[in-house]
Length: 148
Image 1 (cartoon, rainbow, N blue to C red):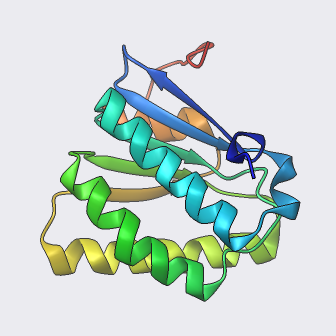
Image 2: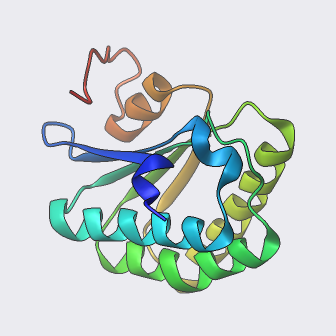
């Protein structure tokens, strides 16, 4: 399946930020599609070499299962560390079940971060503006059309 229907990836060179935006089509996403979407993010990180990774899950309509969480922790997180991303910001989904599963994934990521002694920070946000401000350490920063 074409994972581009489930997520859009944009790179903002000025901010050195890669944005993975999950679409509402995610309601029908299968485990293999989630894995391919994760590898798509890794390939984009390899290409663009961002400092920051913003994963916007506000449209996520399917829960991330424990098996997929384990797979992401084992295969994707180490690669993100290796590629030099310094901060990951999650903009959280609206659906409660999906929200719970993403938070569980975040806890696993944080545990992996501590265990591997990588200098990778992870945080959760209500919107993109908050995440970008945290990335840049600029609480008053105003973002306009950064993904065009």
